[in-house]
Image 1 (cartoon, rainbow over the protein chains, first blue to last red):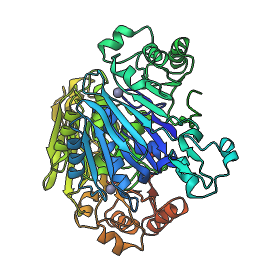
Image 2: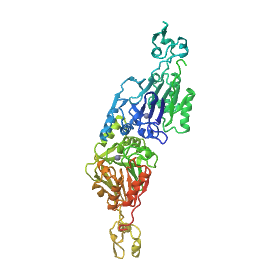
Image 3: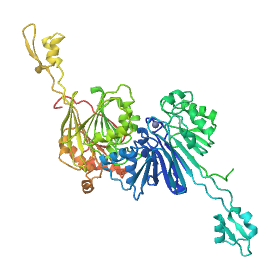
Image 4: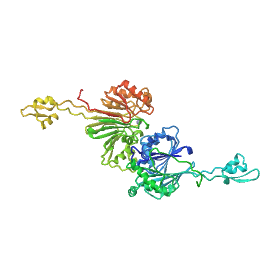
Length: 313
Length: 313
Ligand SMILES: [Zn+2]
Ligand SMILES: [Zn+2]
C-alpha cells in the first residue's frame, strides 16, 4: 500500500505544486488505485508516475471547487483510450455528475466504460468490500466538503505452529479448520480449539485524507488511530483567525489532530503558493513542535504504508 | 507580433506535447494576447512562459473536443485571481457556453470579469477592430470545427521626406495633412497633394490557424497569402485515406495548401503521439519536399512575425 501525492498546492497550480490530487495504490492488496480529488492536469501528473489509469477504479472527491475537480473530464476521457477498462465509481458532493456529464456531452466524448456517481449527503460508511471500508464525514468548508477514512479489514492471526507441534495434527483439512478458529477432534480423541492456536488479529491499516476545511470535530473522528493522516494546511500556525474566516486550517491545527488522535504520521498538504522554500519549511517546523512525525507533502512524494505487526504491538 | 505554441499534441497529453493551445501575442500592437484553443493544462503551460493571463482578451475555439477545451474553466478561474482584469470574449461552436457556465456553477467559481460568448455558425468576418480583422470558416471535422484567419489592417505609407525636401514645408500641421493624404497650399501658392508624397501602403500581416479537419476548400480561402500558416498534421503523408476517414489531415496536405496559396511559413501542428523523434522529423521532411519553408511545431516554440516591407516588395 502506497500513497502518492499528485498535487499538493492550493487554489491554483504553481510551478512547484499542482492542484489537488492524491493516489492510494493498493496494487498488492486488490490491484486497484484510488484517487482523492482530481484537479486540472492530474492526468498530466500521472504521466510522470507508474500509475496506469486502467487501475483507477474509485475516485473520492472532497468538494467541488475547481482546483479539486477540473481534471475529471480529461482523466476520464484518457482512461477510455486504454483498452479493456472496467467501470469507475466517483464519490462526492452533489453536482459532480452534472459537471462531468455536461463536459463529456459538449465535447462528444465517448467513454468506453460505465461511470457510477455516488452522491454523499451526510457521510458514514460509504464503501465496504474487498477487504476495505471507506468512511466519509462532512467537514466545515464554504461549500459541502468531505473527509475520507480508508480502513483495511483486520486479518485473522496466523496459526502458531510451535504451540501446535506436540499434537501431531496431520497436514490437510484439519489444519485449515484450526486456521479458521474451528474445533477439531484428533484420532486419539483430543479436542483442539483453533482459537487457542491463533496469533492475535493483524490490525488493518488506516489512511485519513482531510482536504479543505476549518477545524471541526468530524476531523478527529476520521483521524482516530490513522497510520497516515493527510491534512490540509493552507495557513501557518499563527494565522488561526485567517484560516477560520477562510474556512481553512493551519499547520498547527493539523498537528494537534495528529497528536490527540493516536496518528502515526502526518502529512501537511494543500500548501498555498505564499509558502515557498523556507516559508513552507516553517509550516513543517511549526507542526513538528506539536507532532514530531510531521512532513510537508510535495508533488510526487511516495509514502509506503507498511503492514502492521501483531495487535498490542 | 509573436506566435507561441502551448500545446502541439493530438488527442491526449504526452510527456513531450500538451493538448492544443496557441498564443498570438500582439503586445506591441494592441497590448493583447489571443488564444487559439485551450486544452487541459494550458494554464500550466502558460506558467512556463512570460504570458500574463490578464492580457488574454480573446479566445478562439476551433471545436469542442475535450483536448481543445477542457482547460477553459481552470484558465478563466485563475485569470480571475489577477487584479484588475478586463472582459474576455470566447468565439467558437455552440455548446461552449453551457460547458463553461456549468463548470463555473458547480465549482461555485466567481469570475471577476465579464465573459462574452460568440457562437459561430457559418463563419465569415467575426471581429473587426483595433487594427485587426478575424475571419472564420467552417472546416470538415466529425463535429463543427472552425479555422481562423487573423488579418492586420494595412498601414498607410510614410511621408517621403526626400521627395518633399525641395518644397520647404514647415514642420507642424501641414506635414500632418500631407501624411493623411490631404491637399495643402504653401505660402507661395504651391498646391501639394499628400498622395504624391506617400510611400505605398504597408500590408498587414496574416496568420492562419487550422486545427482539426480533413482537406476541404475552406482551408485555402483562409490560408491565402498568410505570413504564417499553422496546420494540423495528425497523419503522415502516405496516410491520406486514414486521415480522410478520421476527419484529419496529413503533413503533405498541409504542405500543398501552403505551396498553392502563397503562404510564407508553414508550421505542422496537432502531432499524434505515434510520431516521436525521428518519426516526427519524417512528417516534417515529407512536407518540406512540397513546401520548403515548413517546420514541425513543438511546445513553447516562439515565432516572431516581422512587419512587412513596402507593397510589391
Ligand atoms: Zn482547495
Ligand atoms: Zn484534436
